[in-house]
Amino acid sequence: MKYVIGIGGVTNGGKTTLTNRLIKSLPNCCVVHQDDFFKKPDQIEVGEDGFRQWDVLTALDMDAMVNTIRGWSENPVKFAHSHGVNVSPSTEVADPEQQIHILIVEGFLLYNYKPLMDVYNKCYYISIPYEECKRRRSTRQYTVPDPPGLFEGHVWPMYLKHRNEMVKSSLDIAYLDGLKSEEGIYSQVYEDIQNTLLNCL
Image (cartoon, rainbow, N blue to C red; front, side, top):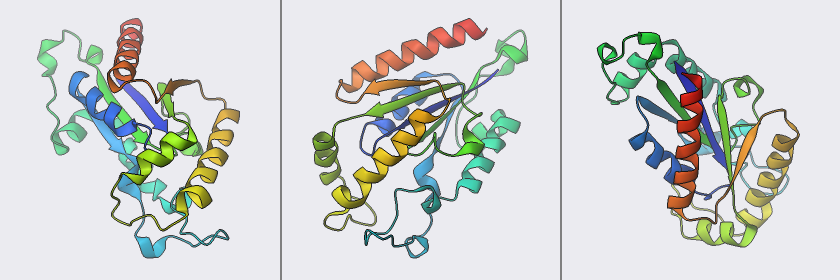
């Protein structure tokens, strides 16, 4: 059985932290990070707001991301081996179809791209308030540093725009409070996934 989990949300909301916890505790679990599909800085357009448009879909090679997810879907065992993930031998499971293979897709614009809308079995979305998001972002070191005013002038407005679009979509999304403790968020999601997987078997 193949199972795809989306972990989306605001920048610096805790997506990667949650993902890293889950991949250590879920069986046969691989991950695709949306951040790995950013285009080169010189390919990022400058918008009317005067900032490079990092927080929009056109900043990402979404075709490559979809192809990567498709590669996992076609052969999760081969994908896992090529990404250094240990897979439980299928001989441990009486019926190979009962063996669970999980893919976590993690990123900030997961639920705004139509070709990905039907991929997910379960969708999570982490939110935090403006001030906390700004505080966390100011402590991060990015390959391309944030220019002054980027958060207020581009990052947060794009987050609100894309979140509004996402809310209007037909996806069934579980919203998570990013102000909860890392352990609290992890426990909530892990338990939810375990219950869902048990119901699928």
